[in-house]
Structure formats: C-alpha cells, structure tokens
Amino acid sequence: MLLSTTSSAILDSMGEYPQWFVAACVTIVAALVIWIVAKLLKWSLYVLMALVVIVGLVVTIGFIFK
Image (cartoon, rainbow, N blue to C red; front, side, top):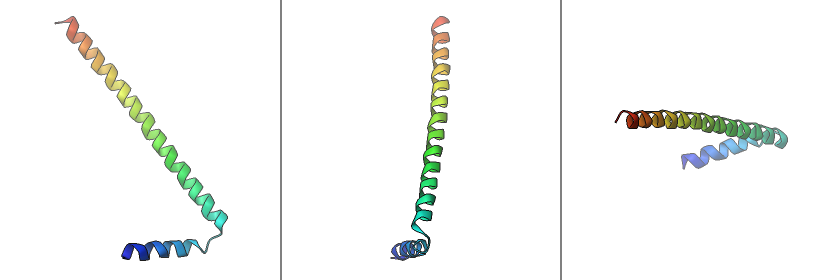
C-alpha cells in the first residue's frame, strides 16, 4: 500500500511541471541508460575476445608441447 501512495505522490509532483520538460528529462535519462548499457556490452565483448585469445593460445601451446 505504501508503494501506491508513494508512486501517486511522485506522479502528482511531476504534474506540476510542464509536459515538455518531463518529456525532455525522460528522453535524456533514457538516452543515458542506453549509452551506459552499450558501453557495458562493448567492454564485455572486449573481455570475451581477450579470454578467447588467451584460452586459444594456452590450448595451442598445450598441443605443441604434448
């Protein structure tokens, strides 16, 4: 019950702002979230690529000296 009271209070306080301002703020926040997710995915791919290269080298060296 507390959550519905809090969310309606947030929506009521946002109702005092102009609609264009709320839309602009939501757009900026959404763009920042998408940018952060893209950066995290990019660095995750870099780490994955490095792990693939390292494991490939270790396995190759293991086959050479076996």
